Structures are given as C-alpha cells and as structure tokens.
Length: 102
Image (tube, rainbow, N blue to C red; front, side, top):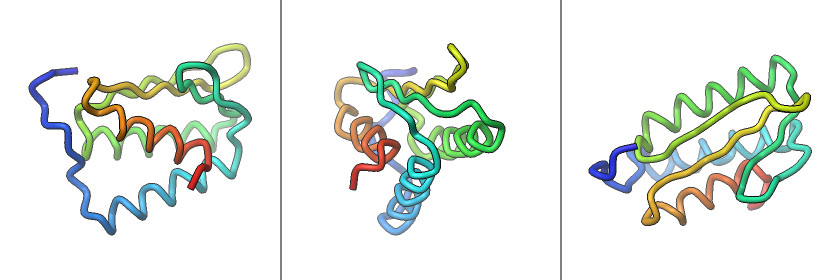
C-alpha cells in the first residue's frame, strides 16, 4: 500500500450508501464472528467467497489506499481490512458494515 495515495473514497454519497447496504446484506447472510483486530470470519461456502471477492474488488477500486486480505483458515474465510493510520475511520466503517452494524 502506498502512503502517497489520497485517503478518500471515489464513490458518490449515493454509491457509498448502496455499497454499505450491500456489505451489510452480506453480513446478514452469514457473518459468524468478528475476531480480534477486526478480522471477520465467514462461512467458507462458494457463494460467500464470490460475494466477498466482488466487494473486495469494488472497494479496491474506489479506496485504493485500503488493503484487503481474504484467506481460508480452519474451515472459515477470514477477511482483514487495513489502511494507513489516517484511514482508520473508513476502515472501521467497513468493518462495522461487514458486522452488520448500522
């Protein structure tokens, strides 16, 4: 991740609202747990993986300063989201959305 990237989402307010709603819907569909340090644990089924990969690809385009890591571990999909210190509020907002928090 480059420290030179601006800490700003390129989505409009309306697009951002839709994206967060999409992420919250994914959470309702199968987020079993949030681990320490904001690691999100999902069911490892194919549909969940595909939805997570689509959201990660979309978020990586509009927020290139963020890092997303999706991996399988112990029968679960683990997603971690990170960014520079200045992006912490945006990272937290995404983690909360994945957790289904309004």
